Image (cartoon, rainbow, N blue to C red):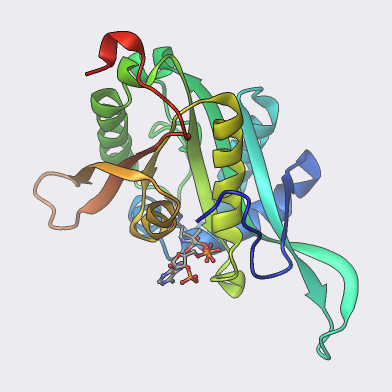
Length: 242
Ligand SMILES: CC(C)(COP(=O)(O)OP(=O)(O)OC[C@H]1O[C@@H](n2cnc3c(N)ncnc32)[C@H](O)[C@@H]1OP(=O)(O)O)[C@@H](O)C(=O)NCCC(=O)NCCS
């Protein structure tokens, strides 16, 4: 699948601005409803929807303020029941890309898209959040080391409102980052949910590890794939070459 291939439907992808906060949060929360990792970590989201919204808005505002993160939206045209165009657009899917350095990985930086377990959002199970974050950070330390060079791009968030699923929004938002990576000669890393992995595999990502985590003594576990993609012509830094 080529990076420049256009999507099958008339979606448009652009960088998000602060004005997108409500649309961003709505699409994100709708999308993550079908993601087991999210549902596992935020089991009280139906009881405290206002906490889920305000904490997600805070994460989005941090993305906007952070010069190393680029939040994106994929928009779909709003059509009238007869199929004619209203000329207006709505947010169908969201993503956030982050430019990171090896120092972030070695210093076990807190993932930018997750609320810290210590925050007071009532929709979250802090113990599950901690177990999950610890597993992600440890897997990044195991796999995203200096063998990939000092700079890299990571996909921190990807979600599509189910009303717009299978129209290519997730793929288009992922391709946006791969094009940047190709232009800048940087590898791309991420940890994937089962649905996300379907897209990443099609776009040429390689699996590095499957990680499962859960609270000791509890039956329920969540799984994540650690994945990497390298641009055409990319070579490992010299000291790591075979
Ligand atoms: C992952 C997600 C963002 C995909 O969004 P999307 O806009 O529907 O994705 P696309 O239309 O680009 O789909 C690309 C491919 O993924 C696969 N796919 C996507 N959704 C699927 C589904 N529900 N069932 C089976 N395959 C699916 C298909 O192979 C699809 O290609 P196809 O439609 O040509 O067969 C969306 O399912 C989602 O929000 N999931 C929950 C959150 C999540 O898991 N995010 C990823 C975090 S790593």
